[in-house]
Image (cartoon, rainbow, N blue to C red; front, side, top):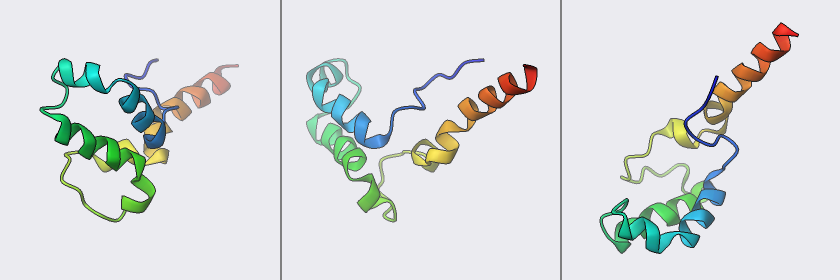
Length: 84
């Protein structure tokens, strides 16, 4: 069992990580330019306020839904519990 993301990371934490790695993310072409980078960073920083707004950043609602975000991890823990 594995996940390909970090379910323990919430959007605000990700925004802080982005801030720390801004130069690397831009240099590696993860974002097309600084404006795009800040659009995503600001979205994650203010996700509670922006939750009802649809911002065209191509981010699935599943990625910011805490219950969906941690469902795979919960299923794994429940599986382990049922085995032991």
